[in-house]
Image: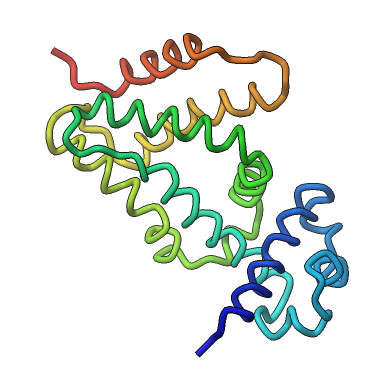
Length: 193
């Protein structure tokens, strides 16, 4: 059984990996630098992770679990789905603009060959809470009967584009801009008539 010290070391290794990858990318973040940044012996990393690839995949899984929990934590099932999806949309924007390293890492990982290292069933498990949330919206006929993968792409694609725009500094969105963007997205998924 692992003790708190083990979790602290593992968390320090994951945090150091995120920090280094955010500065230097996947390939320019050697394990020796991760160990130095995490303030652990180089061999300690191999106690938790067999390879750099395994470490990077573990960081992805950890961040995906954490961010999914964060994005759904304020969900109020007593509200209608438009308000619930709006809350998810805005929560996504605010969380990731405050946690840009996590956002960029997840984006980079999703568009890299590393994604193939995670079994499909594990990826589905990571996305299941958001699928379930949107499936219920379809079931209640609040939104159009769009396959969940497509709906997730529509909603997250919209908000991720706004996050990138905000983080670039090219255009700083106001709360009115966010509302306008959400309702444009909502118009595309809501049940018509």
